[in-house]
Length: 183
Image (cartoon, rainbow, N blue to C red):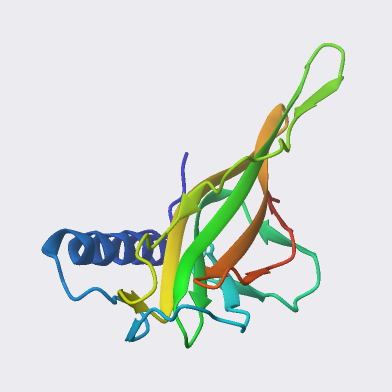
């Protein structure tokens, strides 16, 4: 039997529907932050926050100065991950990097085999602005991704996740690596 926490399930669906409707309606260019003219240089570093909306409705947030940690998902389930990058002189990209880790246990031998985390060559979710100096940009960008975390007696899936923000001057900031796993 599957238990679904309706509050968190419908909350995640509503967030996704709102974001999809914003993307499809051609609203003003800045859904987050404010509109700016992209400068020719930016010597400041952006800021980044990563949040995990868990199936039970709880939210765990991580910033660049947070310690490396593990986020436990009681019972497993779908986790909505958001990366929010900000810079007063404009943000070019908010990225999520999520490397999956899968494992299986042979019921006869009891031997466990693990695959991952792999080396990622690009973000698994991104909200990139391809404009350049002199064009309009935004002071904030948000990337979203859902991850399915599970654990059984015969195996499971967890993730190592971090977020990265990039400004138009090439400045970057990252959160520490967070292990997302079912309990």
